[in-house]
Amino acid sequence: TEPLPFAAVDLGASSGRVMVGHVSGRGSGTLRLEEIHRFPNRPVRAAGTLHWDILSLYAGVLDGLRAAGAATGRAPAGVGIDTWAVDFGLLDADGSLLGNPVHYRDARTDGEAARVSAVVPPDDLYAATGLQYLPFNTLYQLTAARESATLAAARRLLLIPDLIAYWLTGEAGTEITNASTTQLIDPRTRDWATPVANALGVDLTLFAPLRGPGAPAGQLLPDVLAETGLTGPVPVTAVGSHDTASAVAAVPASGERFAYVATGTWSLAGLELDAPVLTEESRLANFTNELGVDGTVRYLRNIMGLWLLQECLRAWEADGTGRPLDRLLREAADVPGLRAVVDADDPAFIAPGDMPRRIADACRRVGGRVPRGPAEITRCVLDSLALAHRRAVEDAQRLSGRTVDTVHVVGGGAHNELLCRLTADACGLPVVAGPAEAAAFGNVLVQARAAGAVRGDLTDLRALLRGALEPRRYEPSGDRKAWDRAAELLAGERAAR
Ligand code: LFR
Image: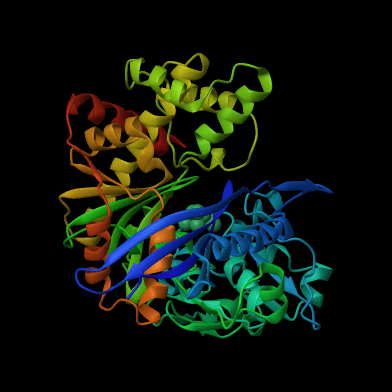
């Protein structure tokens, strides 16, 4: 039998794409991923608030599904959706969207965590939810919107992938991997942290029922079929709808002794565990216990990621010093390493705007050199990301008691040879890089399994994936002492902050 085509909708902070994965479980199995449609994701600031342009993204999804049908000559065997986490749309009693979803980088949550701590102390919050502090966790977005008329009018809250699924199928659900980023889920029970919600006045009835990766999520509605030219029925399946959950599911590891760095706008670095780590030490290290596919826990830390570079590129474009990324990366490779470093976990980098200046300021705080010009700044960013990857991989091992012998780099940064090489050098461990489209692979594999096209647990899915990829391996080299010194310098600055 022919492999079946499954459509993966994968929306990232800077672009969205629709991919088709051709999957067959026969023999040793086949898996091939084809990019069908890619479109920009351009946040819009209006009336002082930074929004997602959700209808433009949805139009991109419809275009992609139409193109998927045209490219394969048939309707997809299934559709799965994954996006970034924490953000949501609110629906009124008629099911209409109330305003554009607000971007997690918007300033509306400034100072909110402190207000929440006054009601639920941070250690209690961590014990109940296992979530790292990030200023934009859904919980803070909701408490910050306490007085808003929109929230008062809302009858339903749908996280972004669930909102897209709702428009495609008319069915509302809350997918658990993404729900785990709201800071309203107990990672031990994988159910709502009701006492936390009650204490903070968050109405959990706004959320649609929880569903897990692999659960049916409805079928494309007649108007969607008409719009995309597809012939139904086309089932939609809940996948690891948090993009990072899908990306981690598609780490092509062969054993358990691996760490991962899912790179893109963020770097999400850590381990896959079977139970959460909720210790005070873990909280102080700001490690998160997000839920993964097949009952796993994604024990990781958010690192500012290639956002630092994307924002610099945007600034250089505007001031005329910009150059193509590949040239910039070649120039950065020739800049001597570790001359200037910043703490890539510093929340000072979250908001958009003027990144080269903020990086220079951070270099001054660390007391190192201040990089000049695009090539030096790019080198500073990549050295700093490698150091942050190292710290997360080391902390995760120490805090969980698990040790690793390989670091898998997946997501967009897997294409960035300098970043992969520096990560191997900083960690002192081999880096296996790829797939770059890990989220789409994870999305497709979970759907294909739910449809019966492939069988097995994560180990089996990863074996199928390994057969389909040629990941690149980077052995660690270079001067370990130099990395140790830079790490110490940053630890000093963090402690002083
Ligand atoms: C990565 C990601 C991270 C999440 C951040 C904000 O795309 O999903 O995992 O912390 O975006 O939602």
